[in-house]
Length: 102
Image (tube, rainbow, N blue to C red; front, side, top):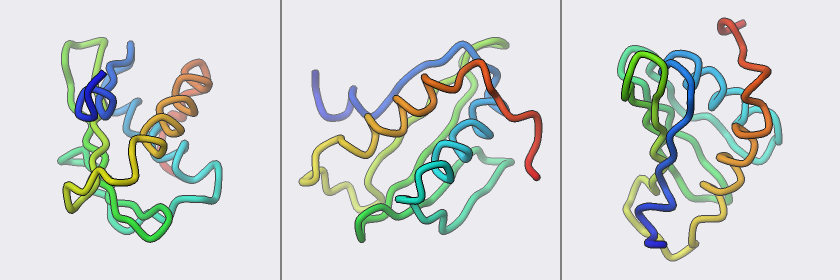
């Protein structure tokens, strides 16, 4: 599996639900600092271990969407641990999707 392919995952959720679930995953562990978020464009800029990442959520079909998480400076030297952790958290909470931002 290539580095880029391990940075993207598709889920059986509408894009707005995946956006909220991603935000929830980032806030749930306390290891990520959300720096900026843009719901209209579907991205979240966050920091983990002194490295910035951008998560982009995109609609694929009416019932599926995808998330791509990349280092904001394109430096993959840290591997894909951050992506895997977030994807695992999203996966574990698919049935508990938040309905709206609080």
